[in-house]
View 1 (cartoon, rainbow, N blue to C red):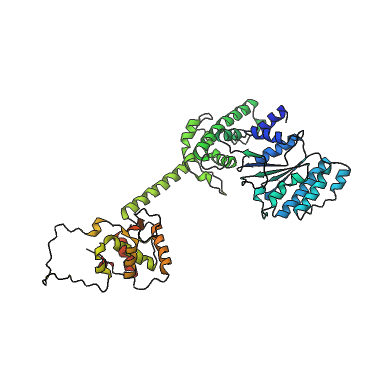
View 2 (cartoon, helix red, strand yellow):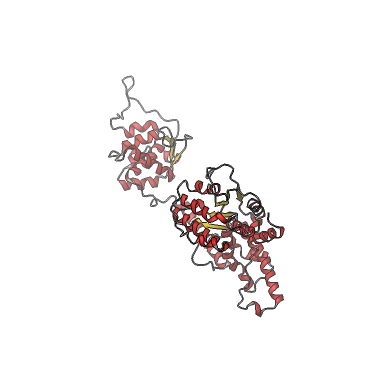
Length: 477
């Protein structure tokens, strides 16, 4: 276990990781038996690599760190491992051990060769730790790489393997009883503690610290720390909580918004301790999301420019919305294929024509004369209900089987792609909201599924004229 003063130093150097430092120091204590393999896992930017390096430096145990992001292939990883171990042991050993290390040329073609060379290198060592950082993202790694590396600690008694991964799969090492150390993401309080350790300066003064008095320097440092901590809290509450993925992203967002935020102080319009006034004056900075997108040009616009941009965009959106509400759906925005146009017209006819009149409009051999009863001519009976145009009643629901029958009746040529292509076009109309499903059936392509057309008469007229179809002759009055 590390001494108390050393733990305090590590906690100050790596804040918000006290529990992980204690657990790691306990597992890797040189005075006790260490595990042959250890897994450190957690999301990105949670302090895994920094914590393990600082802890191993404090334990005074020889160790080597191999970063997988610097290795192109699995063989490259093995050779980098040999070279890293050789460099570390050369600094700690003298005399005869250093001469033996000179015989290793860094060439390693397989895991068996790696095992032999590591065993020869660590023969004179009491303990050696090998860290594979980001091994789960190794390029061109075979499926047996991680289990084979995990067993190096069992083959070589003086060796301990540490894997630093992001999200380990269950039993990805094919070993039981492997200790795992989790690095949880930073919460709001921890993020503010970390960011407060390096506050940015309010005044970008050209004067150096030698030209200023000590009292003025201390006062500026206090103002920087006071305003920076509250500013980071406001950024977390408005943008960082939902958009910044980690502490690094949050720091980048804070740095990009800091200069526009403190610009009123530099212009003499606000004081350094008037945080509420600054927040109200620059509220547009926390409403826009321009700081979240990565860009080559830095964000140098002030709060006034951002506010004008938001107002102009809002005005444009409102005008477009009013135009769409007043004019209805745009016909030119839907350029439909030939068969899809007939399919939409068939859906319109099925919605606005009663089902009992399908034989009258769509059967070629239908006899439109009414049958005589009793040898006489049937006389028209006056209707008891007032006739209302069906176009004024709105679209009615219909089953898909009826729409397909109307489609085949009005289509002058057979469908070239078959029913499979037709079902795809029907799904396209449904996804574009031209057809709306009204039934609760799970399968939208079932023959008994009920649909309703969602376009108006003017839209259908334009589509019918485009393909040369007289839709007026097939529509009931």
